[in-house]
Image (cartoon, rainbow, N blue to C red; front, side, top):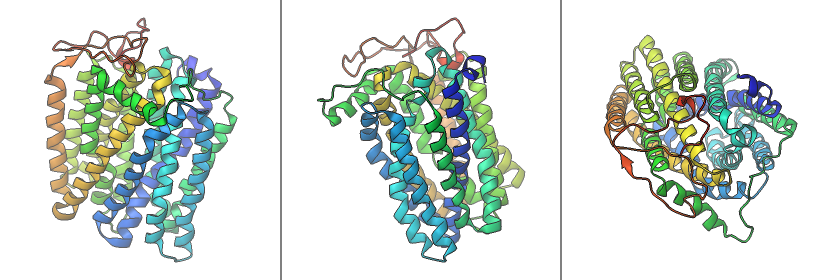
Length: 436
């Protein structure tokens, strides 16, 4: 952690406690699909649970984002974490009592996803409120790498608990991790207040639409969102694919699946840290390189050989980490603070819609074509996307306007040359202007 960030008490608390809480989320990322696979032996059931989760998130994230621009965000996050604690506990309790576990999973997935949408609406604006602009790229690299490290720790820990106490009971780890997040949020002194709130008389629907107008009218935001959306269609359900390949379709052996998720997370941690340290020619080329790396990783997983699966998972994570940090930095630097909740809300919903498509196609591919065919398709599609990102005309990256495009739309003209200014992680230290 850089010296300015180490001296930032509230960011340090947020970074550490959210990193610990993410371990529970990561363990759940293995345990939920594995639990459903063990109960049903059907990857389409896993896709159905994921689809319910995503659909709920999609329906609520944009209005919750608009609400977060009107309310103190930390309070929203605290309420969401307390709700998720109680709801998640229902699964291990039911499993321990030998109750109807699968119906309980279906019953709690919707309210848990609703609480997650509320938490995310507040958390999306935390880094810009806690960290000055010149340190945001480093802060995003740290928070995303911490999440990746959590995925290195969480799945093996979850897999070990599944082997010792049972998969359903192991989900108690996720419930406990939410309480760590609660403790951290209570310890932070900074109020998560937007710098400028929207007038209380503005209709919530119109307030939410402002975020969409800003993305559609800004060429950089629009292209950045398109790249991340297409990636999410292809790789958004990679965890399902790795769990399926690693557990041989939901078998009792959780070792390879746990290690594959850990390797994926370790690669992602490396990719997010590399995004903050490397100085590529431009963000679009960096994103293309990340997509190409992920494509190679998918090809290795398609071999279904144990060592190749682990190496492929790590490469996939590394590529995803590169793409993610540049996506987040471009978006944050292009968005005025008072529009962060709405822009990130729209962006997240677009990504979740893409993820809904992802779990559908991958679930069908795994059900009828098994792991090899599914990952061959994934690798080929990522290779095509990497080529398009590298070769298609690119918009110039310019400082964010004083008057948001949500109110004064001004589209930027695409240009074929490299960007004039690189985003957060890739820009030289003496360039402090925000990028659009």
